[in-house]
Length: 238
Ligand code: ATP
Image 1 (cartoon, rainbow, N blue to C red):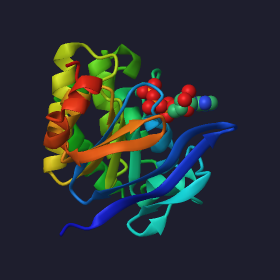
Image 2 (image 1 turned 45 degrees about the horizontal axis):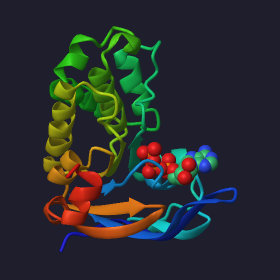
Image 3 (image 1 turned 180 degrees about the vertical axis):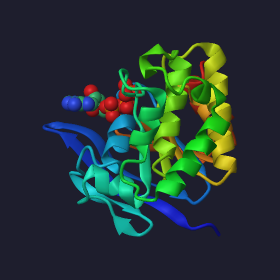
């Protein structure tokens, strides 16, 4: 049995009077891709931001490798091994591709390891190697998504959080991004994937959770959810 790497335990998150996440529980085991799917406003991004420390739980807890993240600051959570690729990428547009990657490693002290990982990123994303001296602003949307993923991987995480990686991308890039997520996972990375593109997210996920109005409504393997008539009707366009 693989070890549980993340446990979200009866989590509630409020924005003032708005209860955005209500009593949500789920877990991720080492080596899995787990996806949270749901419509706009279901609470997906709020959960991700709470795991990465940008928001604080109103109730419940988040355990990463058995330790509570609820009281840690965002940089401490990165240092513990959780990296987020934020919605909309948030790359540093007027810095070069290489500088963006270096920033991803800013909490690391192992210079040799950082250089080694930079080479690994250039191998995985040849376009970033080609464009390493260019300002990140000059990259296309798909390339910026690759840069955001590579930047998060430069922190050497044990768990990668992806917030809507396919959003706003041209169709040719969407498939490529999902292929990259799958191959990063095959090399051992555990992934929490948040997506509105439910069909593609479920097809690469080991397991998924369906969220609506801040609550978990359904769970199953990626394939079970993909073939569930209620999920098909609500989230897969038929
Ligand atoms: P999306 O795909 O649109 O990002 P989501 O599933 O990620 O949707 P959240 O962004 O987590 O949903 O939003 C959950 C609920 O919290 C929604 O009702 C939303 O309007 C509300 N909400 C989100 N951010 C804030 C905020 N900063 N202040 C107040 N309410 C917010």
